[in-house]
Amino acid sequence: MTAKSERRMIVLAPVPRISRMVLGMDRVVLATIALLAGLALTVPEQAVASAFATLRSIVSILPFTVLAVALAAGARATGCDRQIARAFAAREAAAIVAAALIGALSFFCGMSVVPLVAAALVAGVPLSAVMAFWISSPLMNPAIYILTAAEFDVFFATARLVSAIGLGLVAGFATRWLVAHNCFSDALRPEVSTYGAACGAKNATVSAPIVWRFWNDPARRTAFVAESRTTGLTLLKWMTLAFLLESLLVAYVPTELVTSWVGGEGWWAIPVSVAVGIPAYLNGYAAIPTVARLVEMGMSPGAALAFMTAGAVTSFSAMAAVFALVRPSLFGWYISLSVMGALAVGYAYQGLVG
View 1 (cartoon, rainbow, N blue to C red):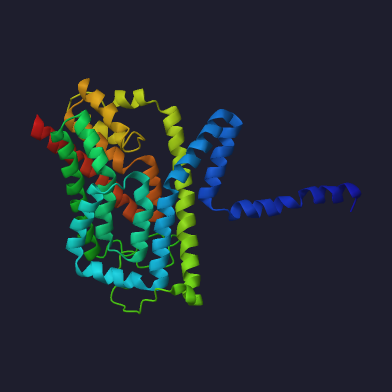
View 2 (cartoon, rainbow, N blue to C red):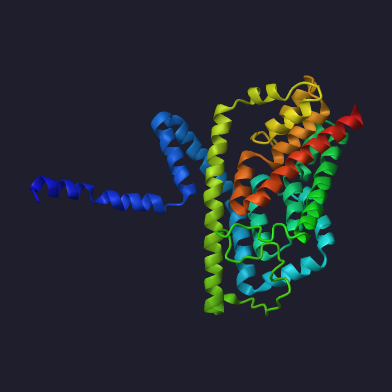
């Protein structure tokens, strides 16, 4: 072998290792890195802005994530996850009603709901109750009610509150019926949790002692660390990608463009509002003054309520986080509930007021 060939082999030696490292990387992490790298090469200023926006969003939701991961891992390590599943399964209908009410009346909204939902699913809370909370919580909280009443009126704000609770109840009881007919037997993705009974059905009848001081037991301590690492890293990587993509939507899809799409009063205004609201980042508090101005400009009240409903439940970041947690069939059910619910409340309110 010549000296030139030896030098070439030395230069190329790291290439297989790099290839194996890239191929072994998680596809979500790889997509995030590739997206940031592409932005850095084409629009460096946007890469910096998106990176900081993503970091701010991650930091803002970090306390909820840490709390939820600790609760989920603690339930697994102490053994109280099965007891939780048994307690909720015995009173599932009451749990659905309570979850819908708590979701609509609590201050949890948007992405802060996702870690709590993950903790509930891992702990064995029935999927029906979790779905009721998951649907109703982003739609309403006390602050949103007050701001909506101030920008619109008490009647519209109350209609939004009733819609949140009603959609939560429909989602919960419909999910309960599907689970009873052998749908969604395993709700969580395998990589989210090593505990397979996402809806509490498989292990709800298994009784095991609860050990609150789990850190004294090496096996339970190991389970706590493994659960925290698995659930925490899964949530973190998907939420990072979701927030990064959302920052690009904010940067390249002007609010004026969104508002121009959802104006008008024809029968088509409500479906268009739902279609635009699904991926829109304009939800929660930010949507209230903007949609109020649209109503003043001629947008129908039903379309306004439909837009707010669709945008709150199915914003891009929320959908990405849901997709990270649950299996594709349940993700499709979540989107279907959101779309059908937004259309239903939009047409119902329009019929009521007009």
